[in-house]
Image (tube, rainbow, N blue to C red):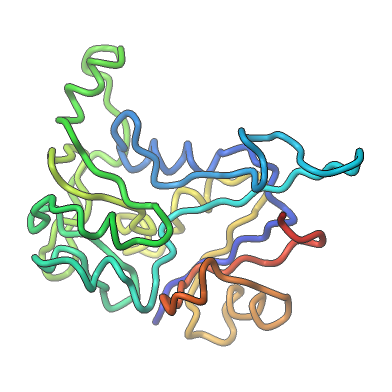
Length: 228
């Protein structure tokens, strides 16, 4: 099994519901976003770009690309970053030493770092006292590695986990469940009958920065008009 995702760019409306669902379900601290949606070519989100009145507005959702050849894992000195048996790149919070080598190595800029205690950060930016959100319990993989906790420790790197706390029991990631346009399709890339495999076979796709040899497991269905 290799879990992967297909993102249909013709369907994306740039609403960022995926980013909000991801942040809420995964208890991400203020200023931390595992999922982001960009408007390629524009200086700010949802701004049209073009020439001579021929304007166009496209969207590009970006999160961890779940590489088969992850640069972040290669440089991790503690073994905190690893790939599980489902092909999901994860971080063991209890082994991360906060060196941030992974952040420097990731060509997609998707890794985040906790510079301060999340509870203090919430107070600093004005969250209501005792306001909590996200999956309410720690999640460990089958080998006991801590790959999600709502009480995020200071001084560790973090990123998308394909919502390991949900997908481990057969559910879809929060971004997939929360997308109103059904832009994201999640499944087993090794199963030729899965929806993700069928879409990749039938429609033109691309992956981000394929030339780097990272072999991402996130595939984008090419839009009718190419992203600028």
